[in-house]
Image 1 (tube, helix red, strand yellow):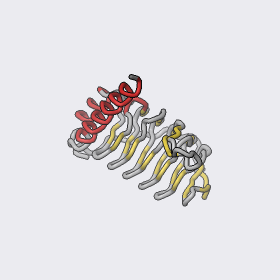
Image 2 (cartoon, one colour):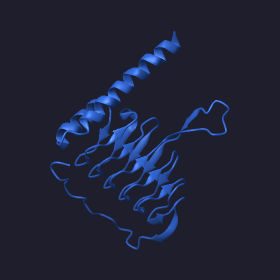
Image 3 (cartoon, helix red, strand yellow):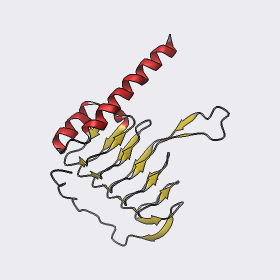
Length: 183
């Protein structure tokens, strides 16, 4: 009986994720935010998610205040995903917290939470893998693949991502501003 119950829960979650996929193409931040919150995402005041975002389980995703998630971004909620305040995530970023264990005989999935601290900038088409923690004020260059933790104020890039610099300003207090109406 528990196998049947798990299957029913999986199908219901897939149905919710499909509905959120369609909601993601409605050109209204308020409309999208309403439905994302309705299905369990925690979205802080002033934060916005642009059109075309994809989710794997919205209940485990928490976004702080004044953060922006770009168009076509994938946010994996199969484990806890925490995004801080004033975080700028560019378009087509993929943040995963579940992957297959290639050393497992049954290719079983394994999960680990992802944490993104305040004032982080993540460039376009970055991939962040499970278990990564990104420190305050870090900058991730476009196209980087982040496989391990990133220290605060580090600038990283490459595949796999490595430190290429450091932000000189340590006292960050900026606001990201408002998103375009129809994005």
